[in-house]
Image (tube, rainbow, N blue to C red; front, top):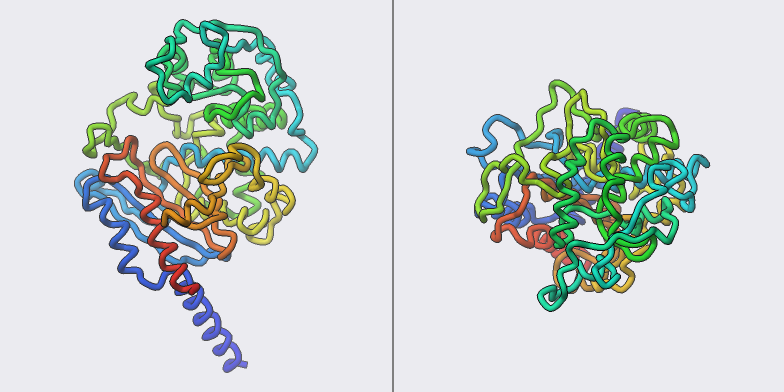
Length: 427
């Protein structure tokens, strides 16, 4: 019996090594590709981690600028602000509520947030779409839409619109001064709770009629509040009770505990790394999300913190078609719906599922990954991807607002080296 156990152990060890070598066979080259972003001064902190479908480490790189990050260890248990990487967590939670019959994707949002009944829509002076103006490549030849006109909302906003960023919400980054200034002035992230958040939000017009066009913004944040009102539970408790506790995920949550330490906020806006100035991360006001234990506002689109180990656990659930650690969170058909084509169907780089980007052949041709990867990222330079063809996941975690020029293209270069090795193995 001892001999058989020993053989099994040897077999498992060899299998694990072979799995690793199928993905990364030249760690020196990959380490060099990653470390240059610390050496060239474009990143203060950088962590890259790859895990297989079972949660076994395939590769990990960690590094930091010792002058800017003096007393924190950077490893798979370091807490990062993940911003928009929160979105796929909130959307997955919503789909779980749909499976349980608590929500329906075609439900009007006003069923749960009746304050939205009187929402208005902003249009340009000639009645045209603000979204179309914002996306115009040459605004110089267009009339300044400010001050905008406000018209009646003509279509019903649904939960599906929130998931697909088609509800008409936005961030303070539209490029239209009066629109951006109005949103930033509300300091939405400084609201005491979701009710106050909604009270501030309804003072702003939508950027277009619900269902008209996809436009990235606060849609998933509102979706989180829908989840709260539909269940009577806070978004933080919903994540705990439906996701992290049942699936035994340790490093994914909202409020930090008293012993948790978050990294500083860095900026490269001057093309050189420094500590960010207060209010510099102004995507939704001068406040970043609150993370203290007393916080009562849980931003479904921006507010979570995670460790590399915790977030890879969550996305391994998606890789494993809805199941993790023996617990089925989502049906396989639901996960398929999440990564199936939903919006941006004409984009040459891929398409959007439910806020999960699926890459096209062009990404492979450019040497920045492979076709069919499920990807997403966050405001402070965080990135994740899922490779369903090879059954592994990866994260690139930083805390950098406005990356310096020497850091541009970071994710594409890192994935490019990873997939260069993969493709060589597969020849």
